[in-house]
Length: 84
Image 1 (cartoon, one colour):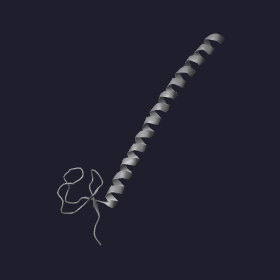
Image 2 (tube, rainbow, N blue to C red; image 1 turned 45 degrees about the horizontal axis):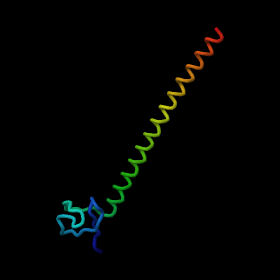
Image 3 (spheres, rainbow, N blue to C red; image 1 turned 90 degrees about the horizontal axis):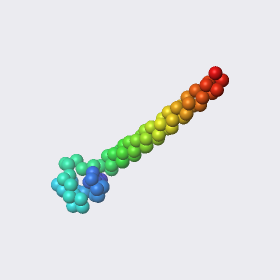
Image 4 (cartoon, rainbow, N blue to C red; image 1 turned 45 degrees about the vertical axis):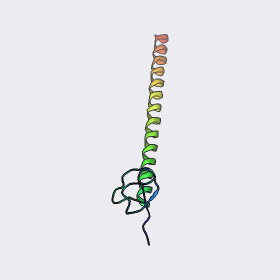
């Protein structure tokens, strides 16, 4: 069975004997990417993007929580002044 190889830059099929990808022009390493490598790399990128999105969301929620805490402190201070 013949191995299927892909360019790591554009994803097109390449042959073992090629030194450069004919579609994107990038130099090919002696071991062009195998299908499993492409899947693993894309999954890693997806996980990184999801993690970054979660971090951004957590930062946003943290900012909102800080703003609510500040408003609550102001409210409680005002209540204490009213009673005192």
